[in-house]
Length: 451
Image (cartoon, rainbow, N blue to C red; front, side):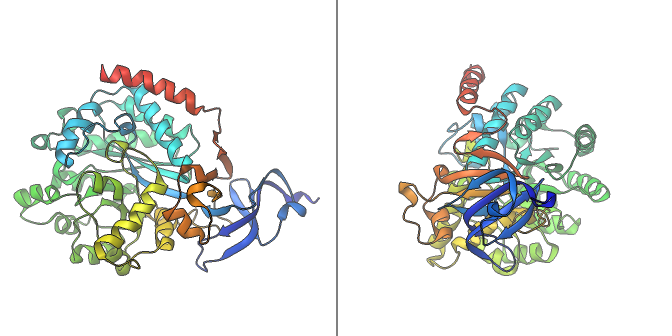
């Protein structure tokens, strides 16, 4: 064999959904990986003409671009079920906020590992941690180490709160925005950023941010070319403080100060107006749709089809497990489709193909990496997921996209490949990470936390 035919990985005999601009589907083909990138995509068995260090026979399986979880709070993986059956503010004060002030760096590390592994197991190749327990820098370090240890492509969003005690925001979390930006800069200096790991910032939520805080953060982000994210219009409370203090809607305020840009990822967006949607499309703001927590907390259903029709980029997120009880992207995809069909009383208002594209292509654009991931194309990073429909819930498989969105579970994910490396395969995680051992460690730490 010639040297240039030698590859690191070949996935052969798969049905391939490239999700590329031409919407190519190969009924039976191969994807070859050299290093961290896709070298070839062919409707043939490449293992017959090329050598590779590893060959995966995907006969009977479907290959998709990896899904991207654009919003999660890792520490909440320790809090599943605490604060159930309450609305957002009450839930925060019963669950996320009090426990968030007490959890140790070790607990943060384990929670990050747990959530990242479940994400990989549900087909995610990238994840965005929205981090707001800022009382101790060691917590951020532990969280970063935990998620990076799993091999998942990672975005760490170090957020801030500069007000909000009247709503129950712990004083330990509150800091001036200028201090928060110094902490973000320090994280960027401590960790090397590349395609596999990046650091963002953002305000936590509208009722814990002042106008001055937005402006300070925006000045830093625009000067240093840093992307940012925030919870926005999740409930009616989001506008209450803004109207009281500034006499206007939060999106009006953000537009006024130049906050609406293509570097912004707005999360939840349940109460977007038609005017908001138009401005998001105009300024290139992306939306992270998190259907499960919006239902779990009774917050409502965002206008996703309306956003898509207006040209707004929509991605998907699971949110923290305290308001979802899992980090399962497949579950998120199913709900993202079904709730829109139900409230619009129109089964065609959103399709399985649109949902998968939100999870893959939409997620890639939301994190500013659409040139690298989100589709299967030669030259792009090899972030891929193999879906095996041969399980009771998902068989027979007449339509691959419908099967993934409406009839799947984590057992269908055969293999998750990130940056050309197999990080999850047939129930086994790479890097010597044992699911059973992790659960034992977490059980011990949860006893400490509750004590």
